[in-house]
Amino acid sequence: MTDSLEELREFNEGQVDPEIEKLLKELAENIETLKQPGMDPKETLAKLSEMEASLQQQQEKLSQLDSEAALQDVGKAISLADPLQAAGLAMSQGEMEKAEQELNKLNLPKLDRKTEKAITEKLDALANSEPGAAKNSYAKP
View 1 (cartoon, rainbow, N blue to C red):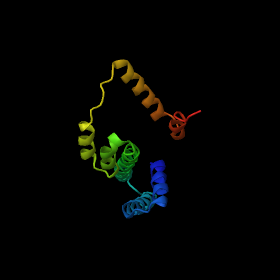
View 2: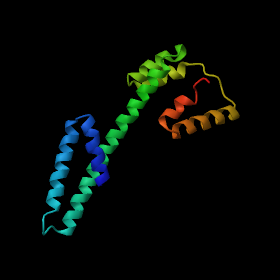
View 3: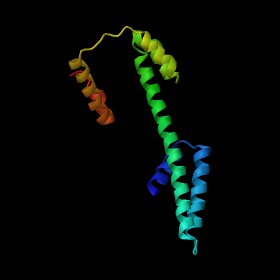
View 4: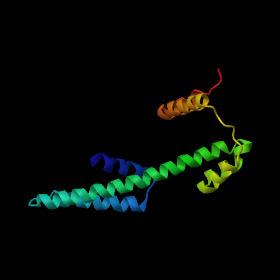
């Protein structure tokens, strides 16, 4: 739980969010309360459980925001290609349903299983590699 709290503090240093600030303050107060002598162990565990749930909820929100930002970045990139421009613009503006509609309009070629597998493996490898590695794998010699 301490790692989660530190991660939340570090994130909030870069982007001050009033919600996160409030949560951090509440958690700090709760931690001080738990340090008081004479606390009932059951009450302490209940408080810790509540605090952990709050942290998990906030982390899920942050994760969702990261995913949305990544999709918007993908949208900006694919909007540079003429056939994908409408879908890319919609995606970069966070309009995922519109982007889906635009992508469905495209007449994409059907891939055979071998090609599909090769592409999937390459994308998986890029997704699991370091951030800079994806760019370097397409660099011209």
